[in-house]
Amino acid sequence: MISLSSPELLKIDPELIRHFEWSTRDYRLYPGIEYFVESFDEKQYKACLSGYRSGLFRKPFSIHVYVPSLESLHHGPCGHTLLADTSDIITRYFDDLISEIVLRSKLHADDAKVEQVYCGGGVIEFFDVAHLSAIMDKIKEHFELTHDCEIMIEIDARAISDLAELRGLGFNHAIMAVHDFDHDVQLATQCQQTEKATLDMILKAREVGFGQIRIELMYGLPRQKVSQFEYTLNKIITVSPCQIHLLNYVCESDFGEMKHRINIQDLPNSEARLQMIQLAISLLTDAGYIHIGMHVFARMNNPLVIAQRQGRLHYGIQGYSVFPDCYRIALGVSSIGSVGPTLNQNCSNLLEYFSRVERNVLPIMCGIQLSADDLMRRSVIHALICHQVLSFESVETFFPIEFKRYFATELTDLARYAAAGLVELSDDEIVVTAMGQLLIDSVCGVFDKYLRTTRQSNPERIACSAPDSL
Image (cartoon, rainbow, N blue to C red; front, side, top):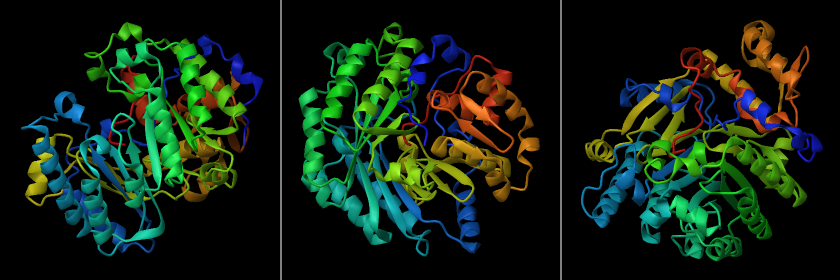
C-alpha cells in the first residue's frame, strides 16, 4: 500500500490541480445517473431478474432504504411536494414504503441472502423509532439476512434519537454527516450543528455498541477557512471514529438549490480546498488513520484497511466495502438499485412514487443496461480506486481484449499524468502514486468514456456529483 505520509504530497501546486481538473467526481455509479433512460421500467427490471435467476451463480443482495429529508419536501429539486401537513406525508410515505418492501419481496423470494441493509437520507428526522422498528421487522419478515449482516443507518446530531433503541433494532453501523463547528460557517450553510451534540453523539454510539462509526466531514463550505476546518477535524479526531470520509461540499450538494440558500462567492476556491485535503492527510495520518482512497480514512484495524491490504476491497454504489459487489434492492423515493449488468432508479417525484406503489406497480423511473464496454471500464476504474494498481493481465483474464490495444488512447492520455508524477506506467501495469491519489478522480476519468464524450462536445462541463439517494 502506498503511504500518504510522504512529503511529496505537499509539493502539489495549484497549477497542477487546475491542469488535471481536480473536482472529486464520484465513481460509485458508472455510468452516471444522467445516462439512465426512461425506457428502463418495471418490465425491463423483471426481465433482468429472470435472466439473473437463470445463471449458475447468484450474488448476495443489499437493501437500500432511502427517506427524503423534510426540507427536500419543501425545496427539493426533484419535484418533492408537500401535499398536506408533515404528519400526513410521513404516514403516507411510511405506509407506501412498507407496501414496496412487500412488493419487492415477491420478486426476490428465492434469491440469495441479504448481506447489507442501509437506511439513509432524512430517516432520523422523518421517522421515529416505532416507524423504524416496523420497517426493520418487515424487511426481516420478507428477506433472509445473514447472521453478520451490516445494518447501517444515517444519524443526525440535530435530530437526537435514542441510539440504544436504534441499536436494539439491529442497526450496527452508524453514519453521521458533520459540517463545521464554526458559527459563521453554520449560518452560511443554514446548518446548526453544535460541537457538543456532535461529539456526544459519536461517543454515545460507541457506548451503546455500534461496531462501526463513520463520519462524513464536509470541506469547502461557504465562509470556511483552513483554520476552521482544522479545528473541526481535530475535534472529530479526539473521539476517534472508525472511519472519516471527507466530502467536497460543492460536489456533494445540489448546486441548483444551493444557489438560493448561500452566497456562491463565499465558497473557498480550489486552492483552499486542496489545502484542507492536504492538512487532513497530515493530521489523520499522524493520528493513526490510513487513507484507503477517495478521501476515506480508517483506523489501522478497520475491516476496510485489512481488506485492502489483502487485495479483497471492493467499491460500488455504497462506496468501499468488504463484500463483493452486491445486487441492490432500492426502496423509497429516488433510491438507486442494481441487478446483473443494470442500474435502476425509483421515481424521484414523491407524488409519482405514491401513485405507482399504491397501484402495486414497481416505482422504477429509469435505468440503464450496461454494455460489455461499460462493465470493463467500471472494473478498471474501481480497481484503481481500491488498490491504486491495475494489472493489464488481470483485465485480460476477465475480458476478451488486449489491454494496450483496446485502451491505446487512454494510455496515451495517461502519459501526461506520468510526466507529472501522478502515475507510473510500465509494459504490464498502471500504478497510482501517492501524489496521484489526490487526483484519483482525474486519473479514473481517463477511462470514463462518457466523460470523454462530454468533454469533446462541451469542454466547460465537468461532472462531479452523485445523487443524494446514494
